[in-house]
Every structure is written in structure tokens, then in C-alpha cells.
Length: 319
Image (cartoon, rainbow, N blue to C red; front, side):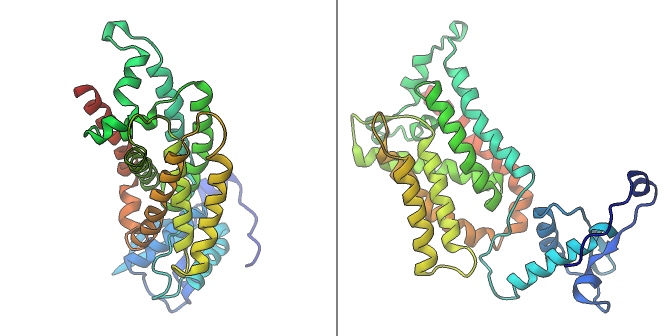
């Protein structure tokens, strides 16, 4: 790839804007307009690499344009993408995501200490005290088996003390960012919650009463499982080597962070990981075919994750 040309001054970029069509640069001078699917794929690639561009209608198709000082870099990124994803191959590959994804994932992680502060503040006017939240929302195995399945979701938002919630927020934030960069913040956040909820349900049925647990760590290890599943299916699809290496890495992480002395719910961590593992593999297969639809719906999926939590708490207090 040739070096980038010098970046023009701010005034020149404002007063004399110029745009270069990427189609001829990538496909040759005789290339015509791009079809919509190709233009959107290229746009996802450039967005992931933070290359400024715009997509416009061009005759019967679409054109992708960038500024002259980014043209070489943009064309190089697209050529690299085409080489790694030839037509008919790598259908399950998910283009990397970046940019606002990390900020939204961190917003989800910051929700944990914010909710901890809310639930540990007495509110006599509303008749709410800290112990009420735990009584209504902890993952009580007996209550879950009896039908109060929503506790598997509410328990993810409850923590024993400040160190507990800050640890889950920091470690969980790292995993949420990694998942968001692969699947987008909306789908990643929703799948992480789903792995945590399913992990709590499975753990409750396996351990039975009087087992009681709370905390976001089940979802944290669900995110680790999702990443392992994504990595196992990424690129050329499932093979013994592609599956065993990331899963072994995930199990090593589980051994380091998910077990130990003290009040550690190892069963919840293991269940969260193995519930997230197939979710990550399935997400690659689905997201690779519905990338454009998921990109448009990502903000709604992100909000849906918080909607699930809110709905679970409504059910907890309505019971």
C-alpha cells in the first residue's frame, strides 16, 4: 500500500472539499456502479477501520467515495477484505466492529455500579430498602424451580458489596468491549445477558435449593463463552483445531478468574461459559448473513437488553 498523501489544511478541507470514487480504484477504470450489497459491505469495512467515506446512489447502483488523502488507504482496506473474503467463501465471517461500540459496551458496564448505588439507598417514601431488592431478585434456586424464572435475570444486577460490583464492572466491561467489537454492542449486550440468564437457570436446576446466588459474573463468563464460540467459528468455519484452541483458552480463563476460595459460585461461572459458547458460534452464522440488518437494528438490540432487565424487575415486584 502506498503511503498516505499529506493531510491538507483544515481550511482547504472545508473550502475545497473533494471526493474520490472508490469503485474504479478497487475494481479498475472500467468498473460501473456497485450493487447495494457490495457498497454496504465496503462501507462496513471502512467504518470498522475508521476511514471517512460516504455512500451515494450512482446511476442504477451505488458509489462509495472518500477524500483524496484517504483514497489509497480506503482502497487498500477494501482489497484486503476482498482477498480474505472471496465470493462464495467465508460466509460466516463477521466484519470487525469498532468506534462507538466500545463506548456503548462501557455504558452497559457502568450500569452495574449505578444500579448498585440505587438499590443500596433506602427509599422510605417508596417503601424500598436494600434488603427488599435481594429478597425479590436474588437467584434463589428453590424460587426459580417453582416458576420465578425472572430471578435469573434480576440476580445479574445485584451484588453483595462495592468490591463485588466494581470487580464485575471492570472485568465485565473488558469482555463486553471485546464482544461488541466482534458482534456490535446491541447484539453483544443482548447475547451476554441471555448467556447469564440461561446460566443462572441451569445452575439453579443443577444445584437445587437452598442454593442462592447474585452478581453479573455469570454473564461475564457467558461473554467469555461467546468470544470462544465466535473465535471457533470465525474464518473458515468449524474444525477440531479452530474449536479446541479458543475453547481451551476460555476454560483457562475460567480456571484463573472463575474459581477460588471464598464466596465464588463456580457452578454459575461454568454454566454461564457453556451457555455462551453455542451462542457465539450461532451468532457468527447468523450475523454473517444478516450483517446489514443487524447493523441497522443494533441500537434497538442494545436498548432491548435493558428492557429485559426492566421487565424482569417488574415481574419480581409484581409477584
